[in-house]
Length: 280
Image 1: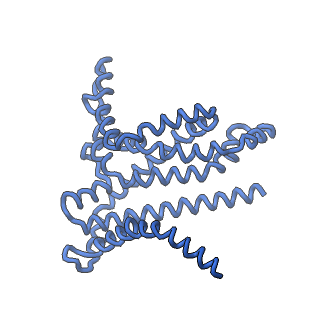
Image 2: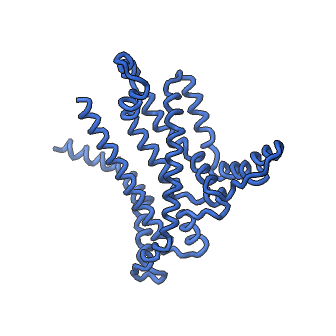
Image 3: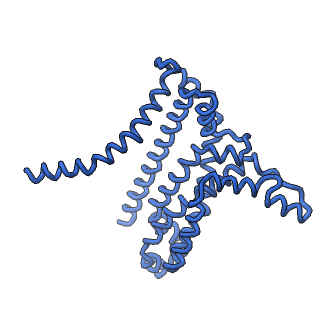
């Protein structure tokens, strides 16, 4: 009994710093967001901030569309690359991982400014078009530029989780499928995709969440013409000093993200159960 109590005490002491960290940097900020969302400037309780969210329905819809589009494009690019990468030699995998992570060592602001220099009217692409006699293209200030910025900045978050799962896949499974006459598409549908589903779901979450809440990418590559929900929150807090409306927008965005993550996790569990039944 004493040994059990001693172990529980030791476990509690070890978990103490993590619980304190969570309380200070997670629970307290969430409480402050909820407090500001349901109060006015005088601190009195109100539903007005929640009612005002209806004014931003289109902004929420645009943010959702852009983030979904960026996530889908990122997945389409990342999955074949991660599969190819997982089939290479160990030295080649290390080099490819380094090349993927190398841009992430630079600040997001620098990476975004670099794309501004590439896409702007006097940028690299339009200069090349001018050399061959073509008219310059308008790229900055378009939705395509914003989605491109999302894909470029967040694609490592999709590649790495998928690669981490695929590299652990037993090659004997694919060899056995080939011996049974399975084509590559059959192997992809019945073996590769189901086994890589945890990495895919992790990648989707890690790309979708920052994409739907981003504001700097849309500010710079959108040229101030593309307004996402992150931009509205930033302006309400930084410019209008309306912390209450900014907090209510943040609260709704956070709830939406949590619901999306719950649905993805539920879908992953259902797929794993179906796969287990099929294998049995």
